[in-house]
Amino acid sequence: MTDFPAHYKTEILKAIETIDLEKVSQAIEWFKEARAQGRHIFVCGNGGSASTASHFACDMVKGASYNRNHRFRIMALTDQLPTLTAYANDVSYDCVFVEQLRNFAQPGDLVMALSGSGNSPNVIRAIEYANSIDCRTIALTGRDGGKLGPMAQLNIQVAAPHMGRIEDGHMIACHMIGYYFMDSEK
Image (cartoon, rainbow, N blue to C red; front, top):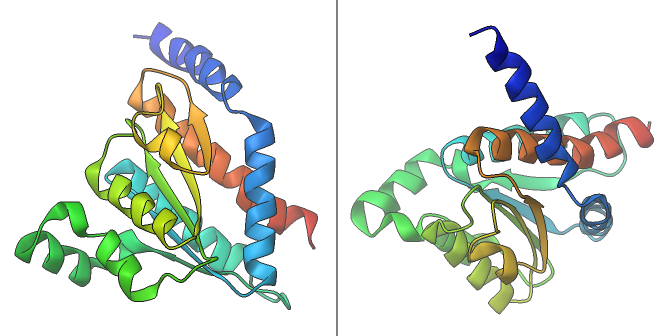
């Protein structure tokens, strides 16, 4: 049992090394441009990825915007619980994010979808729609990127087989983006 934490740490460090920092830097540029142009930013995911999406949106709304002249217009589609559950119950869980985007997203907005497997139908549909209306699209994926990775204009991939380490890597990538604005633009 005492070896497990050391093993996990070793494996998470390997997973972090798979993150392409050029792609994270590109994402930072896209977030800068979205903010400068007053674009909306939408983030979504399921399960642990939903939590990461919420955490990231909070970091950007508060940490990267508070007391600043330029603020982020970002929302986690996962946080719209009544809307999400109404669509899931009355229509299909596959449409919970895309239907929200149909109400709010406009060409030029930024949509970021998180999926460890890269195969979640609801995030795939969100990215398909976002691409179809000329939004910029970012995916945070794991393993081989699944169907989502190649669909997004920018795929930040944690090429590890373990979901926990994929999710850890996604949170780190989100912190790289968010803390760029919090630490570099004081």
